[in-house]
Image (cartoon, rainbow, N blue to C red; front, top):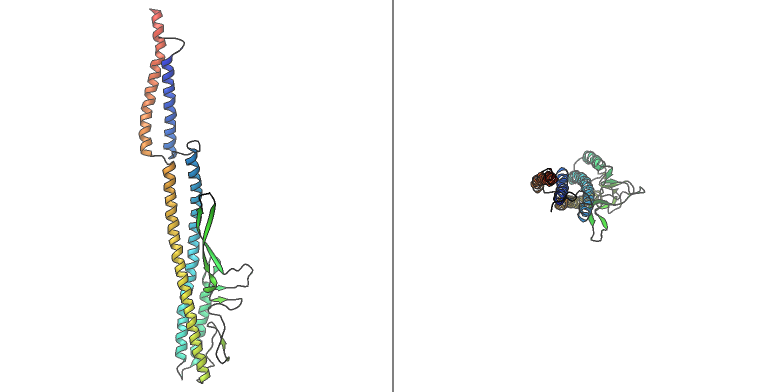
Length: 309
């Protein structure tokens, strides 16, 4: 039935065209933004998950920066203690040479004194970002022998978050402590006969003679320096192990961030190949819809021609 009051064909064509235009607008928005879900209205669940995971990834980025800073601090301490080991090894060599009767111990002491000064300089220079783990002062108010490196950011299933750290015990690696001389190199030792109090950093052999007592003192100095070397080697090994752990954690965090990015992308990113194909199809549908609406609107003109006849 033809009617001039109700054009059913035009109504159908119009609704079809409106639907096509809406789909076309959505597809164009996806192509322009690159996202299938860019707003909460697109998919509330996916948008919420993506927003949370993006926030967590920013936190992980900060964790990665902290790991880089921590690695630099550990590496600085390791470099300093490794250099100190070489210097202390030289001191031990000088002491062994001084054990030979007839040598000029005053001249050997001059060399040892220069090496002791080098130890102090190396320790003082082993500082990064205001932190020095080899030369400390445990008397300061905020001193803490345990240093922490931020290593992880974790979100539990119930939504609670936590920050993990890697701890380093500085007291086992410090070479000097200005407060109580409890560092590896400034701890005071007393010889068996009680005649000499010394530390690796200030031992003095210039006054030692070839008497049995003095030679016994010299032997104890050599033994004490060797013990300090063992402690420094252990400390360097611990720092090296910590550095390896920090590097591994940094690699893990980097991989985790990439994984989260891929996961978020799978939820909200638009498939550009699919959207491009869909855009072309919708453009054709839009053209056909416009033509169909034109034809439907033309039916009224057909009815008018009947009356003219």
